[in-house]
Every structure is written in C-alpha cells, then in structure tokens.
Image 1 (cartoon, rainbow, N blue to C red):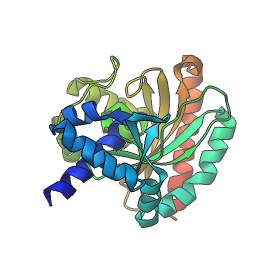
Image 2: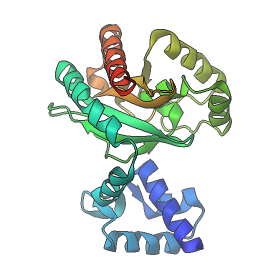
Image 3: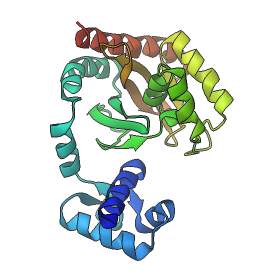
Image 4: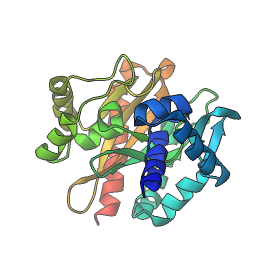
Length: 247
C-alpha cells in the first residue's frame, strides 16, 4: 500500500511541477532518489509519463492519464458547454483560452484548452495543476468560495513560484475583494515567469464556483489598456457558460 501511495504522490507532484526531474521530485516529496527513479521508470514503461523534449531526465504526464481522467470526470458536461464560448473568446483575442476546475480545496486542474494560432503563445498541458493563489482562474474561484474555506486554503501557506507570486495573506485577501468587485482576476507572471492571464469564475446551479476560464498570453502581448475590455470579455464568456449550465 505504501508503494501505491508513493506512486500517486509522484504523479500528483509531476502534474504540479511538470516538466520535472528526479532530483526535484525527490526533494519535494522527501523520498530517496532511487525510489523516485524506480517509480518514474515504472510509470514510463506503463505509458503514463513522457520525457520532456526527448530528455529522459525531465518528465511530463502523458495523454493516457488525461484520457482516463476525462472519461471518469463529472466535468465532461462543463467542457462540452464551455468549448464553444472558449473558441469564440480565442477568436476575438487571438490568445490561448484555459478552462480549469478546483480539485476539492487542494488546487486547480486544467481540463480544456483552446490554443492560440500565433507563433509565440502560452502552453500548459491538460491535467496541469496549480495552487489557487498563483493563477487568474484559481483566484477567481478562491474569491467566491465561502470565507471559511478560502481562509483554510490560505492558512496552508502561499508558496512562491516566481518573484511576482503573492505570498502575503493580507495582500491576497485584498486582491480577492477586488476580484469580486470587478468580476475578473489578473495574473502577471505569478505562476510562470513571462506569462499573463485574465480570468473569471464559472458558477454551478448551487451558486458555488465550479471552474475558472482565462485568456492566457505571453507578457510581451499584455498591455494595460486592453485590460478593461478583455476583463469584460472573459467575464461575459464565463457568465454565458454559467447561464447555460444553470438553465
């Protein structure tokens, strides 16, 4: 049972940090490198991992894991409902559009993506996970969770991913209040350096946030003067999806 638990933890950590190497995994999980290497080898043989750019020292989750998750996930209806509005938003902005859902109170998981057609664009593999406080989709959801749930997530700690990541709970709470007021969240390189995003929450029939949608772009194409227009566009797209889901 311990070996199964360790394997699952390795998969979760790869989803969070991919592409990632054995040394980084061993340090973050507190496991011997030999143990992590053995698990990685088994997962690779089973087709659950793929080397990053052919480099056998850094790993990504394979499409097989994503396919298994999608077949069993209750978010299938959400993805089908969201895909049309996501494509429309991508056509208007020319940027990549993401749909992510909360995995309980642990993190956000990317479940759908409409890629930009531009040569230079952002990319995240489906199944990638990220802490709530580091992304626009995560903060848009976090801003609308019950206060006690949001406080518990914040109390677990705000890990730094870049030099722009918000790690002060008071600063984060002020930003969450601003998100509720304007209707969208802004991420300026807080999860990945040189990647910006504007996101808004999608709500389910109960009124609780069930997903976040965002426009993701390289920072070289982010400009302040676009923010009000694109913030309104992503908010309207999220509202369209919410309306369809809650009819």
